[in-house]
Amino acid sequence: MELSTLLSPECATIAAPGLSKKRALEMISQLAGVSYPNLNPQQLFESLLARERMGSTGIGKGIALPHGRLSNIERPIAVFIKCDEAIPFDAIDGKPVDLLFALFVPEEAVQEHLTTLAAMAKVLEDKETCRSLRKCTNDSDLYALVTA
Image (cartoon, rainbow, N blue to C red; front, side, top):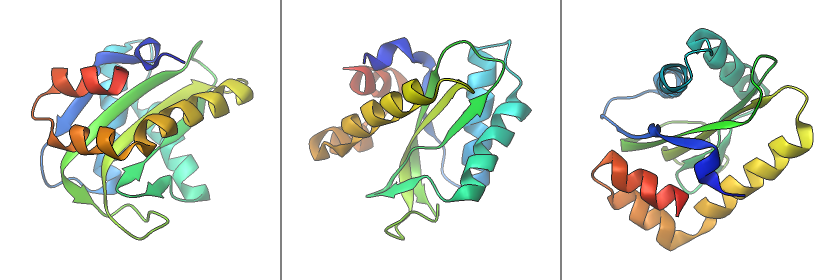
């Protein structure tokens, strides 16, 4: 799966210090809402919160894969945020998170949802890729690395 089909350049950004988990999820929702004006940022945020209530999407090693399902989108979309400072995220390893790769999928697209999450996780399981992402200093380099 080509991540460039899910992630627009406007949805890959470096976040300023001082984010909380809630604020990071809000930022993800706002970025998606700006890039896709037909989507309501509040609805996006609520879908992420609903998933987090079932258990943290922090998968360890400073990485989180927040995701939500929506009835009003036609295809998966992604947002990638690199935090300047790692944030507490209730990850499975207890470590704070600085790389957040979020996904929004159509409600009925169960298999596509799982396939896309697996593709995102595969990108982030590579230690060298994560090291390079953490060194990025601008949004365009961040996007290029994520979609390479």
